[in-house]
Length: 321
Ligand code: SF4
Image (cartoon, rainbow, N blue to C red):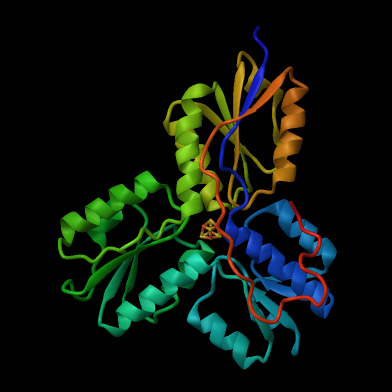
């Protein structure tokens, strides 16, 4: 039986600028205002990140009535509906918004077009907090489609002013198929000038497309709740490469690697590099002798922090990475 002899690392992988910023907002809020800091929903969909922040003094909640009066509250990277935002303000919390600026961009576009009389078809996954936040920018006139079949069923109130928006972390290929079905049914539909699917999602999926044919198995580091991580695993599988997603090295199973010589490794946008390193060590123990980085796009994008979170004399607090 052949043993694993090479690990190829996808490039880029792991943390995106929106996740980096969201984690830094919570860390800085704790450093500046002291624990506890309340966070609505998991700041990003990663178990390790959430547990590290809990240990530093973050309390994660789903409902605003779990937050005591006068507390500091952070909205997660996925964004919130207008109703949640209004309720949080009415309750008088001190709020820091860690919504990824690329999600906020979609919210702004929805609000702008709604003022011009548009209705929307949103391509996304039901129940995902980003979808709830984006759909919740309006009280009506925004219709969710999850797949091509939904497109045939959707019933907008009018079709002259109809626009498409998408969740930022979808499968690029699936979203294109669904958007094509929307276009076929509603030829005058307005599509975003720039794709709503974000650069990080696109780049990580592009990297898996290059990686998959070179390896016998793809391991994706990511939590089950992470949309973009799940899409990476599905993509590798669809490309014909056996693929598994793990939340940590402990979830790796020796039998997955039986008869495999080359392992591809990537990580979702919310999965920290420390977990990738642990996975590398565990696979190395199975016989992998070399670790090679695939060549790929270098991401340099960085988003500014909200006002009020700059620390005196401290440029960058201790960071999970
Ligand atoms: S995956 Fe994209 S939309 Fe989500 S936080 Fe990262 S950059 Fe922002």
